[in-house]
Image (cartoon, rainbow, N blue to C red; front, top):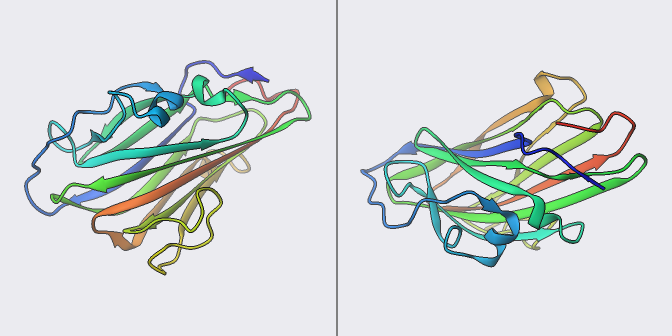
Length: 203
């Protein structure tokens, strides 16, 4: 199992629209490993992204399932985009030829009273090899299972988007308009599936 260089691997973000003036009370999220976000350290426990200082997306509750130790190699770098924002993920280990690796990452975000979650987007740098990313979202609720959830606790449908390298560049960028929109929170799961080959060496 190899590790990707620190270049951007993929970006996941929520789109929000203004409802009222923001009233920031949380510290900004800081760059750190996925393992540090799971542990809820000072840079990751109830931290904020987007909006004015302090942000309007309050991020918390990271969980991981996948190859042992990979969560210490995966780097999350907060990236504000307009009112909302998200994370750049880099350093994800890549499989050896013939090997398949699956990573599941989940987290939740609380929306400050100033905004409504209207959409989501997922982007990937052009890879060499067989790679796919899928994002599933339950708005104003949670999944019925920590990973690979099939339903939302409030009976709304799971909303999904995905990217892969089957038809670049079009297939490297995915967006959805949330319906229903997220009025107060969302639970997000990201699944990464990589199959190694002789050309799977960089993203």
